[in-house]
Image 1: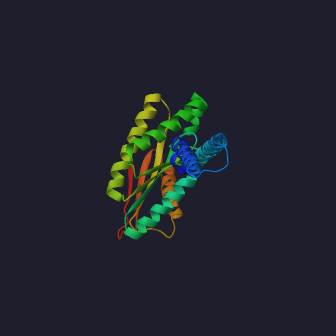
Image 2: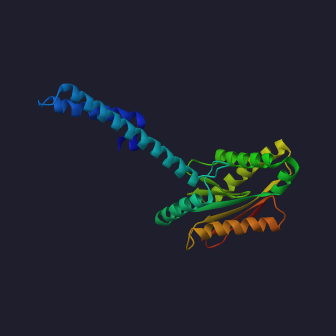
Image 3: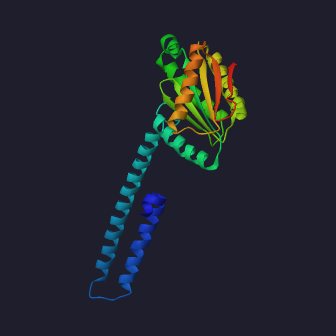
Length: 242
């Protein structure tokens, strides 16, 4: 158990301590057994403890790796769709309880296929990695960046109202455009931003609303940010061209 919770080094130390205490107990109660046999038993016990310690440490490491892979996108290292939905559900419950606003942004790369066609799939992978890194650098530690699949990303911004969203997302898009201009990639970004002052019935609806706004941008010429606030008496809808 020590190896599982504290790591192999501490587990080995506890194994040595346990074998030594066991040996001390046997030596403190004289018996007809030869002393060399007692030492031999101690060595065998210690060896068994150390082997079990190593196996448990290896198993824990494999478990942690699998758990991490199940939660992250293997290409970019940000959260994957499944884990993003889990985190959004948790934040949805927290926002409902404390009545915090919650914002979800849906980001799609315009003309992503042109990068793969003109520069190769390696450039496409590099682009996706740079997008993830750039977005992570522009948001807070409590925010969550996710690659939902393909060239689509999402950002969850807890405790974020409409004014804050209209500060953060243009900054995110500006940094992304600097990256693509530096590499000469013929792309832009369509972004839908849904801020919920009053939460919908389910967390999935939040993603759907942000996705809908993103596609609305696509149909209006791409390379824009569209905001919408849900739950206010006067619904705010802003289209910002960057």
